[in-house]
Amino acid sequence: MELPVISNNAPAAEGGGCSSSGCGTAPDGLAHLPDHIRAKVQDHPCYSEQAHHYFARMHVAVAPACNIQCNYCNRKYDCSNESRPGVVSELLTPDQAIKKVLAVAAEIPQMTVLGIAGPGDPLANPGRTFDTFRQLSEKAPDIKLCVSTNGLSLPEHVDEIAKHNIDHVTITINCVDPEVGAKIYPWIYWENKRIFGIEGARILIEQQQKGLQMLTDRGILVKVNSVLIPGVNDQHLKEVSKVVKEKGAFLHNVMPLIAEAEHGTYYGIMGQPEPTQEMLQELQDACAGDMAMMRHCRQCRADAVGLLGEDRGDEFTMDKIDVMDVDYEAAMVRRKAVHDSIIEKLEAERGVAKPKPTDIPEGSRPVLMAVAGKNGLVAEHFGHAREFLIYEASPEGVRFISHRKTELYCGGMDACGDGDVVEAGASESLLDRNIRILEGCEVVLCSKVGYEPWAKLEAAGIAPNGEHAMEPIEDAVMAVYKEIAATGKLLPQTDSLKVA
Image (tube, rainbow, N blue to C red; front, side, top):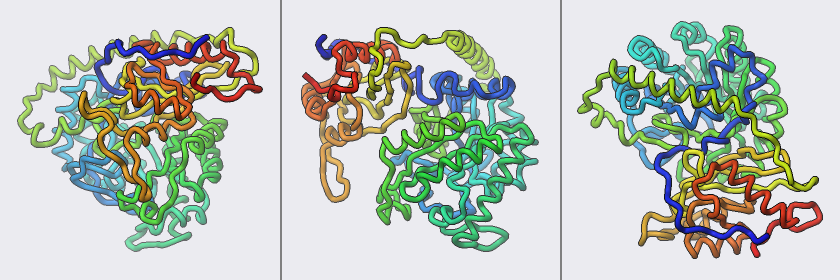
């Protein structure tokens, strides 16, 4: 059988977000949870593999101060051209935040979750944070409330968290060993003074673990975030995963370090390496033996708005919100109808179990494929993709692995391939950089691809495929896997797939 050839006639899909079939935990990734906990998270876009494609979230930036210093963090204000934690375009007062939430919830009826995640630490700004939550509980009672914290001040605020019906908390825990922590945290601000090095890390770890236990004892759900830092905590995170699971955390999100020099972080300036995609996947798979792993995290800005995989924050700046006429009572009626419809669809999807594939030769190796997708379909032009979803096909089926961010290579009929990027003193084209980011993948599925990227993808050992445009992603990935299997190229004694 010949390898698939491209089709240039498929229409592009409307909408945003990522695939509806696999960004995150596996469909049964939360099956270990008790029914009452699973019921809380299965429709939460930040936790559920299915729900985050249908329900939207937003963050409000009301917490400017922070009580620790992380070597990977540099909070930036009035910044619209970076997408990473700690970055915001507008710092809001609680009253402004409420006005923004009501406007967004009226315009985006899929919104179900409001989180406070910075740009500093929400619990280092308790007045601003809990004033925001108090008003939201009164004015938008149908919106779930979440808070993210480094955990240093967590134990003293558990009562307040419970009081405001905040039943989802994220704690960033990068270590459980103070010697490892001293390499990540230069200092903490504790009891009105800075404490440095191992002693500061020890206090932080003790507070994090104490707060985690207090939350889970009260039935408050805890997700743990960890930043993977090569040579610092890459092996240690396996122990972190075991410890936090024992204390009741239900989900672990291992995220790659962002250490680009232009961000101005200590790690970036000092040239700390970022983890490779292979390193991240290996660690996530290793930790998955201890607890459910989250794989769809986008490391969102502290003022992100919309579905995961998109950010509509520019539509809801305060100057635009100030002139909006929001009828929130009418909006709540509309929102309920939209939510009910989505939940009905999700319930139907949960009742369908996908069988393992047949007609795959025993001993066939897995294959990584990159997908330019929208709304669960292979629906994006190669040059228009800002990220590729990475799937693994194997005799066990199809599973989502990660997403890889890319630059917009093609901005229109006359703008494809314009511009270079410079890294470590060397210049490369946007196209070459995007192909390098897809290293390790053997196939890229998209709706269309131009002649130049087609040739360069083939030269890099990646087979372009447009024969499955507008098909559900997992179905398309498995179809291509079966096509490759039919050539005999998946058996152990054969070489990796090469483009004919």
